[in-house]
Structures are given as C-alpha cells and as structure tokens.
Length: 396
Image 1 (cartoon, rainbow, N blue to C red):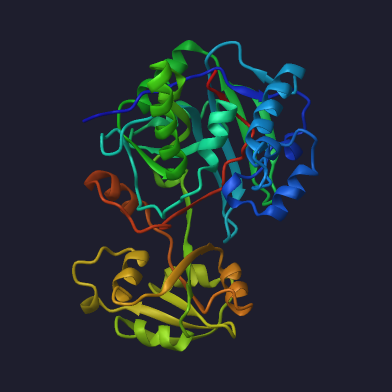
Image 2 (image 1 turned 90 degrees about the vertical axis):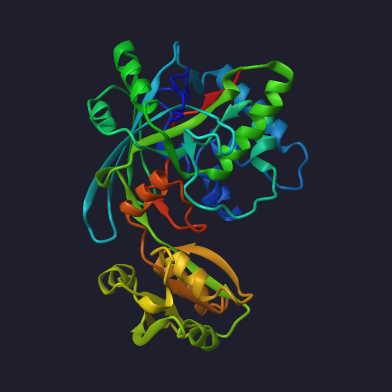
C-alpha cells in the first residue's frame, strides 16, 4: 500500500496585531465578484488582494499578486516561521439544528502523487475546469495560498492534535464560526504527526482541482529545477471519523426543462407525494423521511422516495440515484449548497427546478476510500470552510 509524505514547513503568517477577522477571507471558490470587493474593503492587507487578484481581463493581475505577497513579507505584515512547523487548525461552530461542534485538523505539506499512483485518493468525479487561474497564480506567487482538504484513514490521528500548541491566530467568520490556529514547534510532536498522516492513504475531501493544479505545477518545476518544495502542497488533514466531520448536501439545479416534466421523469423511479411549501428545515426532513425533494418555481415541493426496484445495482447516493433516473435525458444540471438558496434561485427563474438531496454519510465516504470508488460530482459539502490567509506555504 502506497502512503504519502506529510511534512512540516516554515509557514508564512500574518504578523501579531493584524486583525484576522478582517484580513483572512473565505476560500476563492465561494466568492462572487461582489464578495471580493467587500473583502478588499475590509482591510488593506486582506488576503483576497493576493488570492483573487482580478479583474479577469488584466494580464498583470498575477504578477501584481506576487509583488504584493513579497512586499507584505518585506514590510513585516506577513512573517515566516524560523523553522518547519505544523499548524493545528480548530473550528468551533453551531450546526443548522443548533448543535455545538468542534473539529481539529493539521495543516502541513502533503505529497503530490501522480493520478492513480495511490497514497492520495480522490473521492468524487470532478467537473471540468478549463480556467488556468490557480495554476497561473501559483506560477507567479510561488506559494500555496489555499489548502486542499484531506481525510486521513489513520485511526487515532485526532488524539495527536487535541492538545494545545502555541497560539498564532484566531478569527470569527461571517457565519459565527471561530477559527483558531496553533503552531507546533516540538520536534517529537512534529515527528509523531508526520508519521501518523503518512501511515495510511489520504482521501481528498475538497480541493480536487487545487490538487490537480499542484501536480501540473510540480511537473513544470521538476522539468527545470528537479525535486523541491513543489513536490508537496498545502493540505489540511483531519481524521475520517464522525466527530471530526460536518457534511452538508450540495443540491441540484436543473435547467432547460419544465418542473412538471422533470417530476414526471423522476416519477418513473421515485414515489412522489406533495411536500407543501419548502422551508429551510427540509434539509433535515429529507434525512428523516429518507427522500429527496423537488422544488418548483412557486416554492412548493414534492417528496421523492426512491423505489428499490428502480435502482438495482446503483450505489445508494442521492447524486447517483438522480444520475441513474435521468440517464437517458439531456438536462443541464448545476449545484448549490443551502435549501433557501435553492428555493430563491428557482423562484427567481435562475433554474427550472431544484432537487434537495441528503448529505453523504461517513460510511459511504469510507467505502469510497476502501474500495477505490468515486462518487458523483458535488456529492459532499464539508463545513465549516477553512479560512484563506491563516497559513500560506511559500515555495521559495
């Protein structure tokens, strides 16, 4: 069994005294252009100035981001660790049903392996992404700005992470989540964490595209410079256990089809019953009912209970059930997190209909790893999203 290297590195962090509530930001792939403008206005050194340099038609935007990164370090706004370290990353938050949760993982440098080589495993099929934005930004800045999210199959990893380390940052995000980062400098603890993560394969939970870009960048640098820090990439690793995961559903939006026609198509494979007006609680209700829910433009819904005889041999994932039920159609599908977002988008005409699905369970995620399977695209939405800017990994 191939296993990956996982190593500490001299992290680049905001200097003490910088307000991380204002300087750190959500990951680039959840930010709209309007969001980016808001975050830029929150702090003169907000990380989006580097991570989302825009506008898209500016050919100098990546070089400008690189200059900013160097300037912020030169002026002392960003400070590099004196020696290689790991970073413990903790979150404290409240789930949709009001439950208080805490999770812990570790930020380090995970080996970049060839596709299919083992050691670092994908967990779902990815949708095509033709844009080279992340690759161009990595080339210019020579840094990993946003972490990949990995799940470790090593039992007991969490036990190595729960003890406190040296506090280096804390921020409260717009969703009320408290993010805390702590620097691990103790050599014995660093060695123990590195060995634990490297003992079993790591499953990519979020950031498949970022990991693929890291592979392309690694190959480019190896061709000119040989082995180096580009052989690994910035990764948050948490243990694949229930207590350390908060998984939401990514719902489906369908385009180019009438909602009633879509319901008729799905009615060949699902038992359909009225659901009334769709409310935010429907995400939880879907789990309790063991059903999906179609959302119409008028805000009403229809429960879709899978019929066992319609899905022989199909993996019991809602995304897979929908793919199978609509396999003979040409209907465009996009993806959206959040029940109310789906209702609002469909109601405003941004999609013909939506289908609320249930979150993927941890047993299915582990089965994905154990059996080398792939889930349908956008099967899982891991929360809370990690903050960008709390740790940057320089490649020079």
